[in-house]
Length: 132
Image 1 (cartoon, one colour):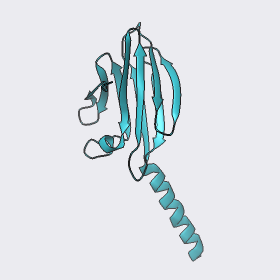
Image 2 (tube, rainbow, N blue to C red):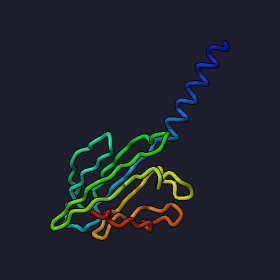
Image 3 (cartoon, rainbow, N blue to C red):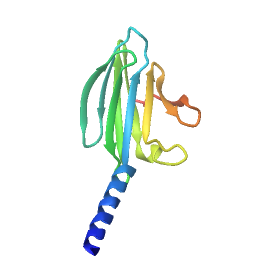
Image 4 (cartoon, rainbow, N blue to C red):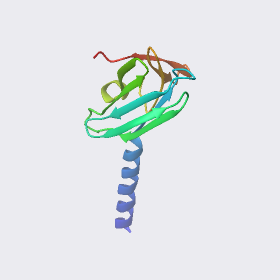
């Protein structure tokens, strides 16, 4: 009986840890009805490929953070006459209360990424494009 309880306890800890470190990034093309957005997202370990988003289409990234820190996902954003980069998830920035971001939702606009703020229920957090 004790062995069963130990196994159940370990399974519970594993599930709790898996839920704790899961993160999601949602990227929405908000450039305008006639502008397609080409995105290419990566981490140091994963290249997620190139994706084309029409106006108001969404691309999702799902991942688990590194328990020792350092998780970073960055994307390039390209549309006619524009090419920019943005860190869409930086564990040192996005895993710190009160601005902790488990689901980071970005509206991509010409001036940068506008991230959803749970407190204000709007895309009020602004991230300008990374310097080249």
